[in-house]
Amino acid sequence: MPVDIDIAKVARLARIGLTADELAYYGQQLQGILEHAALVQALPTAGVAPTAHPLPMVNSFRPDIVEPTLDREEVLAQAPDREGPYFRVPPFLED
Amino acid sequence: MDPADLTIAEAGARLRSGDLTAVDLLAAVRRRASMTEAILHAYLTIDHDGARAAATAADVALAQGRDLGSLHGIPIALKDNMVTRGIETTCSSRILAGYRPPYDATVVERLKAGGAVIVGKTNLDEFAMGSSTENSAYGPTRNPWDPDRVPGGSSGGSAAAVAVGSALAALGSDTGGSIRQPGSLTGTVGMKPTYGLVSRYGLIAFASSLDQIGPITRTVDDAVTVFEAIAGHDPSDATSYRGGVPEVRSTLDAGVKGLRIGIVGELSGEGTAPDVAANFRATVDALAGAGATIKELSLPSTAYALSAYYLIAPAECSANLARFDGVRYGPRLAGRSVEESMSATRRDGFGPEVTRRILLGTYALSAGYYDAFYGQAQKVRTLVIEDFRRAYSEVDVLVTPTSPTTAFAVGEKANDPLAMYLSDICTIPSNLAGDPAISVPSGLDSDGLPIGFQVLAPALGEAVMFRVASAVEQSSGFTGRPALATSAGAA
Image (cartoon, rainbow over all chains, first blue to last red):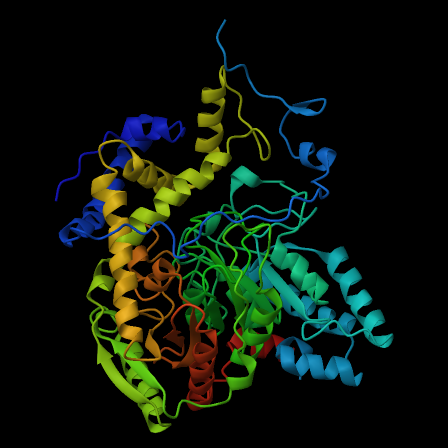
């Protein structure tokens, strides 16, 4: 079953900056895998409920008790860039 | 005997009788690692200082009469997708190079509280995506039974370490067979618990509804020991099971007399190597000889389980791996905007298999394709669960070969993702259902490579699963060790 993929759009949605060659390479591989995956469409599933999770669970609560959190310095020490107690990122709003 | 070749049970007895110290046991395991790592590359990081301190503390505690339990003083390795405070944790990915987590995973806390000595972090397929441990940014792990072959994956480093004796036991994680298949390919016991029994807090997520941590050991008894130590409710994991951990030890040696064992036509037929099929048949015959009733069953939906898995797992992975954006951890590549920086960082940081699965999952979840792919896969998941439920109304456990083949050559399937995916055909259905399953070594093929036998049980059915696994272990009489371990032990 042919599968239609706009691989450039998919890569953009996934925030992976691929070159034209890489897009062609992954596009072709995805085609093959998706044709196999499309076998799921052969199974009749009218009236079957989807399963998102093996344990049917509702909200999981714990007692509302203040507990120690991770050490801020230890966490920030792993960041590629920081400013004081903040993670620093490139500008994301154009002015 | 070299202490590196002891089981947990044997080492525990010698530690308590005073014949062995935890420091000497660790030294033996380190010596084994130093003799085999250049060939195998099972470890990414060995925590020399932390392990020595833990072993020393274990000896002091025992001398003072403080016995922390079955893992006291036992050297254990961790797959490098479980976070360890201050010890580099990379998931075998460049995108986490240099990452030193600010906390320990719950399983790590539990092992430490039980007196275990954490030897180091083992190699895996990047973010646990793969079946051969070839997809590591830091180079592949090799199989101690034949270094030209893969150890399976994705927990291949953990399995190779346990098989060769550079750890007495290890933890792996299993999303589609990543504990059981390497167990099968390295002649070790690999067990995936019921979803929710072992906390995932601090397990770097691949596919959250499928991932589960479990033990890799040399015996079924040792697997029980590690399972008991790591299982239990954890408030830090919202999907952790609150109903208690099944008691498994008391029925371990009860045998299979009177048990009903099912064989699944769809999971032991075409594609199975002749030696694997013959061994499977012989093992089933032995179980029948020991008093089990064997019944052939059909689980028609399992034929679609692989296709469903390769939509569900990538879909969840594409969402989980969105967190690797070069903001809070890992390296960052520059860009004129946040999006440009993220796209460059992620292109550089993820290897080909991870990139492939993120793209696959992004596609399966994207507008216009969701119902046909992800939505349909979720319905197939329901059908797989219903098939299992029907089967377990007729039998106590199901059995299959763990993997259709024994260890394949390094590079053999590296360029054919679909062929690689097919090696998980027998293990994937349990992940979709959330059920427990275990692989036990059951013999060697004509090339002298280990074969694994898989026992599947319904959710929370660990007791009967371990019981059948123990019977398989006894009837097969498998005590084989790879030549690399034997030669290193004699040197």
